[in-house]
Length: 269
Image 1 (cartoon, rainbow, N blue to C red):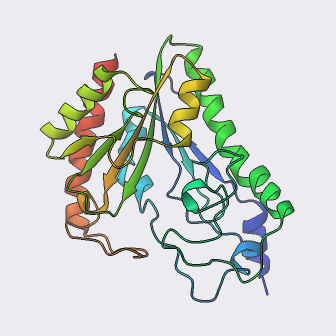
Image 2: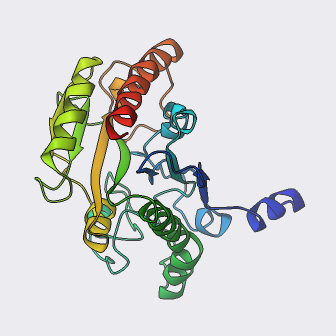
Image 3: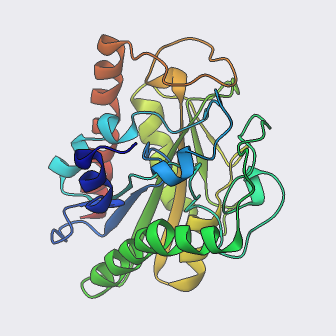
């Protein structure tokens, strides 16, 4: 049974956090869509017993906490991607997690639900969790475009694959962002000890592709950060949940990353 305090938390839960929504000193919006951990009780109660929910973008709001101090506008999704994936199109409703707005299997292919979902439940999740995130992004983009003729949306993610890179810069092979921006970011990541590559295996998904099309003056980049480049310097097994942070390593890598975003801020001024 849900306790009274838990019920109040559910009723007052805000699915999106926005940092520096009124600070427009930089023509950049940061999106962090896959780090949310919130799973409402009505969803959790339908999950198969003992199910693991891996492959989250673990701890990115904490890792990128310096962005607020640097003056970036940051939009953070607090809802788990396993509730609804805000990095999918609203009409993507079939197949694996890669092509489904509401997952029926985990990223490891495990069946999630003991009770099948209804169309009504999907629509409720769109209304309660998906729409607020995209409304926040659209609002932030429009506010920036009142002040700048060109703006940039950086969509931040992380990954556990061992693909011999620390950073993957995705611009859909040159379609969503200029080569000049990619080259600058690639150089700065390299200068600060990260190994960057472009587009393979992650070239960008719904957020970067959609908002580049929807707003012609908005360039977009998906930036993927390897788990081993900030959580622990080790190989991660598929299916890991809540990996333990090596605190000293985390802080050292955070300082290096802050230097990259500080340089990007100055580059755009």
